[in-house]
Image 1 (cartoon, rainbow, N blue to C red):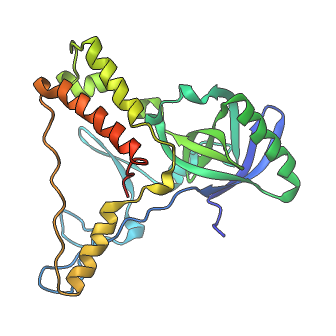
Image 2: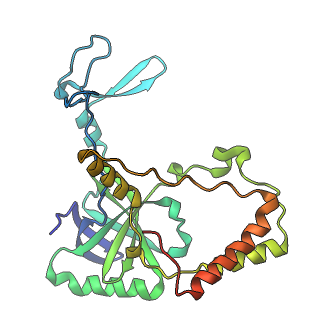
Length: 271
């Protein structure tokens, strides 16, 4: 069984529910060590004083915020003194429509579990009420010295806490992308109708289990092939970009291809 990364109390008005927070995801990416080429010698990072070149013990390292004329040094206990309070409370301040939350704000997800069998009824009641209303609780909590904004939503038989980015952490696309965004792109009614047909023809059911990380599979295959003294075929290069003069032809051909694939008994999902 997984270990809880946080324990506290979920509060909704006058209702309090002791809960535990568990990581909902895990990373399966292949990790490599750094080696010096031609050897099996590991290369490791060291904390080095850039002026003297000498390694610095961890207990002698403090945090410094750069200013125009040097650094402001902040000690660990000073950070602890100003850490947000209520470190054991996930306080719901209101309930929002899930459709109003732009996915760009989602940072990470955690499973919430009742911290004791006696709280099962309150947990189930909250989950069912959220499911019926299509809403999520919006609140804040503190974990490891940081305050997080989070939604609490139902998913099957469990409550999920989705940690959100603060509004100031999401960049303005118009400011960041500048002139890269199309401003006055002219599209005809026929082009839009055909594009809609393509989307409808390629509609599929949500079945996440059908999809796999093929890049990680190829990395493992590469490692095994090199270990056995063999090689692996390079990946297929990406297709060329669709030229504007070919757009309608490409859309219509795509629709026909999607319809033909469906008639043969379904689409091939990536795997």
